[in-house]
Image (cartoon, rainbow, N blue to C red; front, side):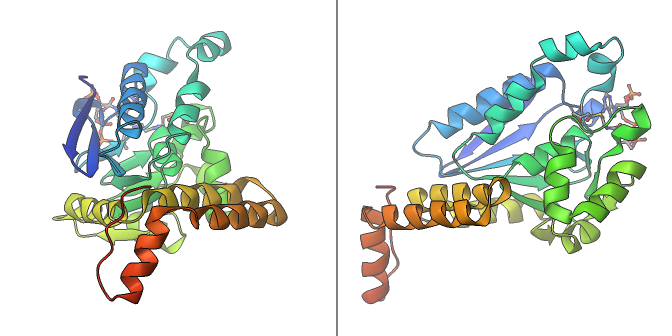
Amino acid sequence: MANVLVTREDPIAVVQLNRPEVLNALSEELMDELVRALEELDDDKAIRCIVVTGNDKAFAAGADIKSSFVEATPVSMLEQDLTTRWERIRRIRKPIVAAVSGYALGGGCELAMVCDIIVASETAQFGQPEVNLGIIPGAGGTQRLTRTVGKYVAMEMVLTGRRVKADEAKAMGLVAHVYPAASWLDDAKALARTIAEKPPIAIRLATEAIDVALSSTLDAGLEFERKAFYLLFATEDKKEGVDAFVNKRKPTFRGR
Ligand code: CAA
């Protein structure tokens, strides 16, 4: 794959967007490779957490305006099957950490938001500038940003296209941690390793339960959580975790 580089550091893997000359603009080819890389890692039992990242200057500056939008029509956009690719990313079961340095704009911000956790370098800038092109976010921006930061802040960001810096993004709940510019990727990988040490089935059900909170009523979410909670009492990892606590030792979780 030319547009996406995959580095395995079992039990984590790093997927790096690799079009630095255009600030990792999300061409169709890049998106296809990204989906393929994530699905392969999702099926790989040795991998327990995935980091999606860019480079120091850009996570991703959005859809590739030059290759995708200049001649685009509603029909060509429909044929690109934009939604399917994004849905496939959403359905990855392993936790994905978006490690953002530099620009995360338009589809880049939306890509970070389709991941499970966003962490940022202090140089990161998030924004939905689509309105400057005469369009609106098309890969979940109006929905996920609003659910994350609330109506009034999302409205201001989407209607003005303003970029917010890492600290402001953290204050509004979009970013979990802001790391120093010198160590942001190492810090993001350390976070991924921490998650990778946890029991995989519990991690999967916790991820699903939190996602259900965004798409259902409180009653339905509580019901989902309760069933998932009970189910985990059937796992070997629950026995291991409880036994390790009782006997004051470090647990080893096997995902069973
Ligand atoms: N698509 C295609 N090429 C892009 C790009 C994009 N989204 N963003 C940057 N590039 C290219 C530039 O054209 C430039 O290429 P050339 O050297 O060949 O001219 C190269 O990357 C470097 O960019 P700049 O010279 O512009 O770098 P800068 O540091 O001066 O500015 C920037 C950086 C503010 C991010 C600016 O590039 C910019 O505004 N980019 C567009 C951001 C944007 O509008 N994103 C939303 C796209 S729409 C979308 O994503 C829809 C959706 O919901 C899926």
